[in-house]
Image (tube, rainbow, N blue to C red; front, side, top):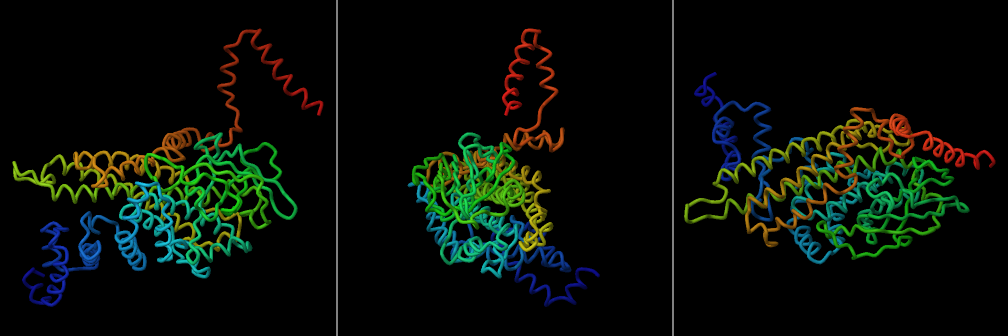
Length: 520
């Protein structure tokens, strides 16, 4: 069929497509050739889907958003309900979260007001099943929500919210037949109950899976728990904490870990003393839980379940959502750079800053690199949805159901790339905006400081890079999280360097160490 024949038989259809096209023509969101193709050619299902995606205008209050439009977002991944939630959240960022972000950064204010706003949309129970009063959403939606908060609203809130989702996931994993956990999950939005994770240790730094300074023991019908943490996001401000310690009955094996629910009344902290370079609202600092007497159901899962819980939900949710936070920061500075460079004019040459090829190169590369990171993050979120029947928590009534754990090494890569990218993108968007970007008013410098947290937040990019390299070359067993494997190759090589006297001294030392054990 020729174009003229098509025009004669499909005039009404063409008119409806042309009308829809007008919604995005003004912002030039599609190349002219593609607009003509959609307007004048036969519109099949793929083209119609593209038209719907590209014609959806992203709003900022009553006006069109000044940054990148939806045509640069992977909207096709979202369900209609998730798209509607995204729009409501963007609107909430415009009215509330973004202004509060400035206050949090300037005065180190914890973003509880933003959590109250998020609770109004049901977002504190985002992944909680509907039968418990939550939204029943999946991993993909969690990544989208965190990215949206970081991009349009407040990165500090996004990071605190990431920890809340991680704590909620740990509770959901083992809430079956646990009335205390179930009660909290039912009240997250109603009572604005903010949760967080406390897994770090002052003696092991970012090796948070190794809690040397913490312990737990049976005490009456419950537990006595001591936890010392070097870094706890929302420390002293959260209402409930999932903490990791060595298990009751610990006998020296640091892979024997357990998790406990601790409420704010048992936590000692120094709130408002956080003075970080960026993410100034997240109040990440040391906490102490000292000989807290907890009820029986404060144990989250069976004794010794800590390592399983970490690999199955804590790490997957943290890595997926924190990566979304870094991606959101990258997008935020690209948005700001677009607004500034398209409005700033150099009158001596009659050009906008955006007209310079160098600036176009900066922005183009930043968009492509960031969307590559987003694509990997969303793909892995979809993979998590796939192996869990779309984030169905009922599968974990079987405590040995651990489908997410097999994907953990992919999530290491997601976090590494997102954190690496944001550090580069914030620098380049500062370059693109010049001296104006160096001033607080444009907000580039705030996002730059926030973005630098990505690389150093545990597991740090140095740790993740070595994990992936070592596991790929030597196998996963070589990672030896809890320092249990003997490197005989190195040991034998070092012994070869010793003379007879040194070997004799070493042998006597080793015999002296094992002799008391034989006597005992």
